[in-house]
Amino acid sequence: MSEVIPARFLELFQKKSFGHLATLLPNGTPQTSPVWVDFDDTYVLVNSARGRLKDKNMRQRPQVALSIQDPDDPYRYLEVRGRVVEITEQGAEEHIDRLAKRYLGLDRYPYRQPGEVRVIYKIKPERTSTQGS
Image (cartoon, rainbow, N blue to C red; front, side, top):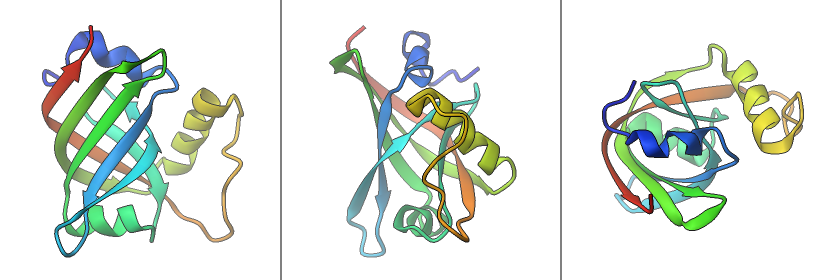
């Protein structure tokens, strides 16, 4: 279990909580993307497709920040700062289908593109801040 993420915020990873992922562009400026989020008791998990801007950014500059808003209380959130410590394609197709079940109520992720390669980014939480209880 993560010692960095407060226990009272772990349920955000079971809800349809959207995260806003901040990555760094080559010139050092931030870029943000709304993302589905997951947690495996150690790492925050984000799933995307190889070749997207956030993919390129995280491969080159692994420092990220992620703000996760409670869908039931928009004034309650968890911010996670950390590093991408692993990027893997292994299990990524199954993972995006599990996220589609949570976020869309569908058994399969419906937005796959021809030739798309799904990727999981494992983010090691280093610091958090929170708002709300």
